[in-house]
Length: 261
Ligand code: MLT
Image 1 (cartoon, helix red, strand yellow):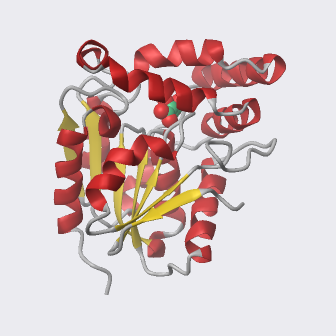
Image 2: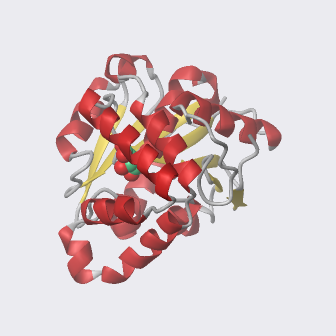
């Protein structure tokens, strides 16, 4: 699948994968911070933003293949750094496990390695069916927004909320359903974290209610070369809510990732 993407800057390649049901705009502050010294490639994952939204189950492995196809299309064969937030992190993890030769560093932001519980998977299917039937994303958005941000974001930086709602509103029912069904069937990757040899930054908002810091810490500890960054004054959208803390952690990490041979 041909993905829409932005491609800015020159230098070592960094690919950033957004969360559900958002689009590449959530990474704007990271693109600005990295582009002076990196080539930052930021796709809209299938079903999101300007990318096609076929009627299908968007398995995380399939979304990872879309990213590989994008890199192939750009002639980028050397290993790159891939970062993903939440659903984007599930995709980044699939990429690292399925194509270890394409990855030289990984950033897992506000994400999980565990699978859905049967209850959570059933709830996703229910939501997918409701969205496809009614075409209305309103209940999904209203249910998600309060859990996405830290209280301090709602209080001190409320202007960050409307652009995220707007990004969600642009996602199509087919895209939402495809991603929900893909996330519901994603495997538990916890027992495979030890297979990832490259350096990994595990970053998490201190107030992340969806993928909490304890889970991030467990991921970092299971990785051969994992490091943890807990981002203050941030919830589930740490890079977006507090780029002033997230970006220095990311830049420090990128400086430490060995260049490819
Ligand atoms: C996301 O932010 O991508 C979602 O919260 C992921 C999920 O629902 O598991």
